[in-house]
Length: 413
Image (cartoon, rainbow, N blue to C red; front, side, top):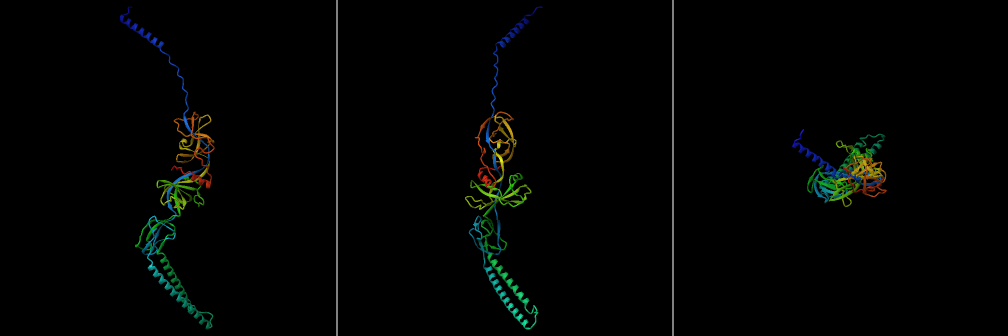
């Protein structure tokens, strides 16, 4: 069988191609074997912690109000003759100070007439007493042992005595009305609002002013059921020595602080919010460079229960609400369960099985698993105290000191 020229050409071309491919594969450089790179463990910020004794701070807030806040009303009618310089909104006055004077002439005349009526009643009584004695002597001269009450003028004597008592009551009432023309403050305080002014005519019951005391200030602080669990409050009972309270507010662009104590809880639970309201008392609120003004909104930190083995860490150290990432001696990651006691600002207060000197991861890891290797970057030095702020507190005065020493803590609300 003869092969055509065309098939010969194709056979030659195919042979040449196969030879070329073989040469390329034979002469091509062999790939170098890849060496696996060493995996570097991720770097994480850690802090050394040592559990300690801590007094929890329970945050709340409220508005300042005076212990006594009343409306002053007129007890008698008349024209206002004079007013005190303190009888203006914001004015300060002392206890018993006269705030205004109502015209007293009419009441002075009433007192004079009442005293005259009392004198007449006393004179009548003296005459009746004399007549009764005379009647008793006359009856004795008649030789009878029993005397008639009418003959002895006993009804007339009783009527005269009652007239004296009535005249004395009228005199006392007139004297009291005269005293009431001077409107005096029942306590040391401050004028909130005035409703009358000089020359105005008032009647009994007219509102004159609204005032409040300045010796004691109070703040109603709402507390949730969880917050109550952190406090030792005797609900339904009197409170002799309640927890210490620190109040904070911005006044004229500056942060001011005051100290007080819880003195009682209110009788009812709020039906809408289900809050229990505790009342903090601050003595002498107007002393010092920053007075605790009525109506000021304040943040409060209340000294709560004291716990042992408490650690304070940045908020980002807590994972899933109840776990810490702790490095062991071989720099391996271990998850440790903890109990969240409180979150205060950017800190969390925890309690759990954390050994003194443990290294807790406080930075974020993109991926984490039990036993993975970590390169530690310590943010503090290992010590015997608390890693993030020493603050061991006990009950009583030390608990109050714990409140005072944490002036920079912001409550998470």
